[in-house]
Image (cartoon, rainbow, N blue to C red; front, side, top):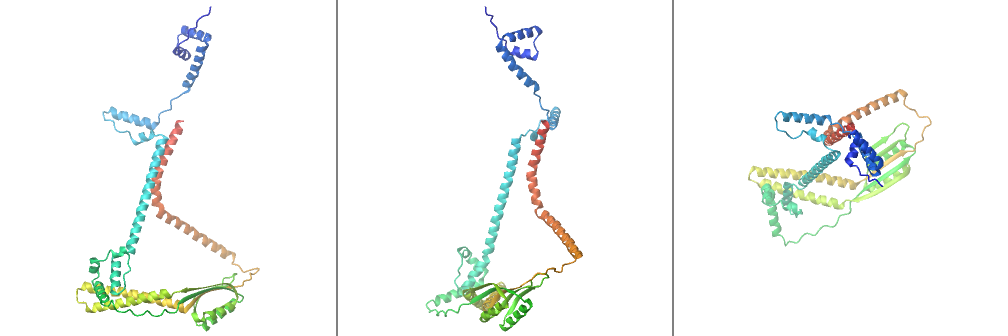
Length: 429
């Protein structure tokens, strides 16, 4: 006859494994486990769970958290209303996700502020350049000056927007001259225009570059002076290098009359062996014509202004304004006259950039500086380099130090808090 084995309740098995049953009950459960394979398997699983729970330990509470809790408890026990936890208590409860999100938010905010400030600075610089390029007073003055000299005012729409009553009030003398000029153009519109003169001969500004290697440097130097004297030229700039243990050389910028250029070049090429030659010509006819027309218009404007000044009997402010305009126009005339003379000089005198280099044979035992001089020079150079390095560091700290401190304050705090949090976690483990 088979005996029926009743299973043991799980809580009894767990109590048996933990040693919480009485002796008679423990013997009965032990005998049952020997006969019942199902309960024995359950007891084995409970035994592994019990061993895992026995090895588990609760980590100690951080001292800062414990101190904050005790302070808060003492504060509440004294009868005060509990307030919001302190910053240290809240930060100690943050995980690495909170720190990562906070640091990312701070960095994104800094980048947005930097981009916004850069955009505002760029826009401000652009507006400042536009104000400098299109000042209201200058455009109004140019408009009335063009009207006074019988020249069409070729101005942009943005410039023409500033003309009107304000310009007439600011430049009354020029406004009257413009009005008189308009009346003259209206009365003589049907008059036949004079035929334009024939086009002048082209004006060419020539420039030449020569590189010559000579055998006898002293003889070539003397021959160069003779060539310049024969062709009525001169040296605008001349530099001769006669270093020790090195080939001698000469770099000169010559000015030779244009009709004498070909003959002078032929003689210069006989000084030695030609290495390189470059010739170029720039036509400045139109540039000279434009400059002459502008100069003529400015002179006529000056004459009209002087006539207005002689006939003016109004307020002192208007007279002073006309005198200021005369002074400004006179300055422009003198500047354009100087440009015209420089342009004509470029056409009359060709520019020759000459480089003479000596054929050099190195010596087997060249004389050298003494050891004491070389040591002294090296010591002085070292002191100079050290002083330059220290000065560069000081200038860098003065110029970029405040910016570095700001970025260190923005990015250093999150990094410091992350490192502190990491050390606390490592200490708990």
